[in-house]
Amino acid sequence: MLKFTLNLKFYKREVVIFVVISMKVYIKQEECIFCESCVSSCPEVFVVVPGKSSTIVEKYRGKNDSEGEVDTNLKNCVESAVDSCPVNIISID
Image (cartoon, rainbow, N blue to C red; front, side, top):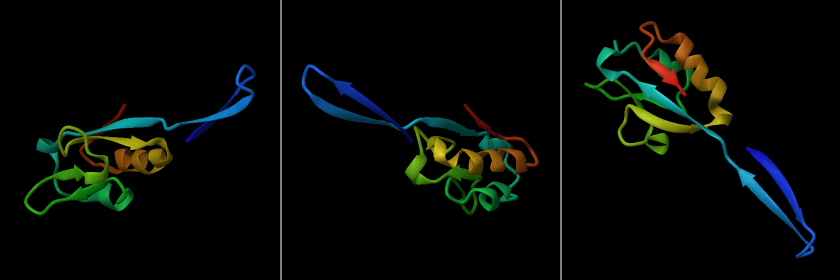
């Protein structure tokens, strides 16, 4: 999370703006081999649903469970999952 402080002299007040920067995460679910390496690396973001492939946890899901938007404070965690996936089906934007 980035914190910006903006001093508005006209109003003689300090305004604090918080900006949360996020990154997009994608899973090519049709190519998942159910190894759960993403879950081991980053359980805050990934889960394997029995009978289904890896998915993004509900908290970070976008339009569907194969894509989501994650706060950058989880960047290292997600990058670890990307690196650990043996079939390279996880990507970040």
